[in-house]
Amino acid sequence: MEIVYPPVIAFAKTMFRVLDLKIHVDGAEHVPTTGGAVLASNHVSYLDFIFAGFGARPAKRLVRFMAKQSVFDHKISGPLMRGMRHIPVNRDAGAASFREAATALKNGEVVGVFPEATISESFTVKELKSGAARLARTAKVPLIPMAVWGPHRLWTKGHKKDLTKRHVPVFIKIGEPIEMPKGTSPDDITATLKKRLQDLLDAVQRAYPDKPAANDDRWWLPAHLGGTAPLPPTPATI
Figure (spheres, helix red, strand yellow):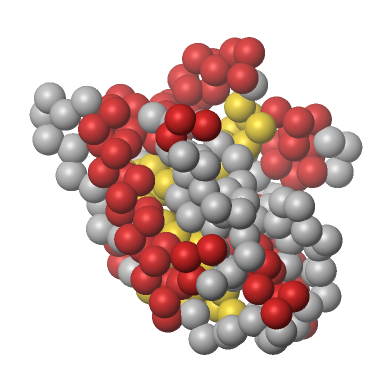
């Protein structure tokens, strides 16, 4: 029985209305209504898990996100995360986290993963960890790519948070499950996932209706779109 998750969702929806966020979800039909699935999203803000989870609501699914242990250790967020049955990731005991996520998938849960591991300050897709691909392969469930764009304008790494900002568009685009033919390695699947995530992100960035209000507001756009976000690191510097 879900005790914590429903009121948290209700609170989030209330805040969406208060801030008049313009949320647009495309591709929700790709989230299965039953059975396990790995939902793999890009990572541009501290709020991504809220909107990635919102993208699964048309399918009436609750997403169990994998998040770093420190979030569970916090006196406020910790009880909420545990109550919503999210999955702590302890980098010193990664195998246990993987087993817990795989078990949740086999039990028919949707598990949310941010395969970049940390927020991308360039607002492009960073190199990915292979965990999402390995989870989907191990549990024999779909691997579903998702791009989120817009919440970084409210709260992201290296910028002052503004959780009172109103009328911000938030675009959520969900792609078709990635095919994983027998014999395909996790690294190959991860390379496909990275391309699919970047394609989805490119699409929502192109469709996004807002433009920077002034020159000093260009920070939330990636460099290749005329923004002042840092250039993505080259493979040699990752």
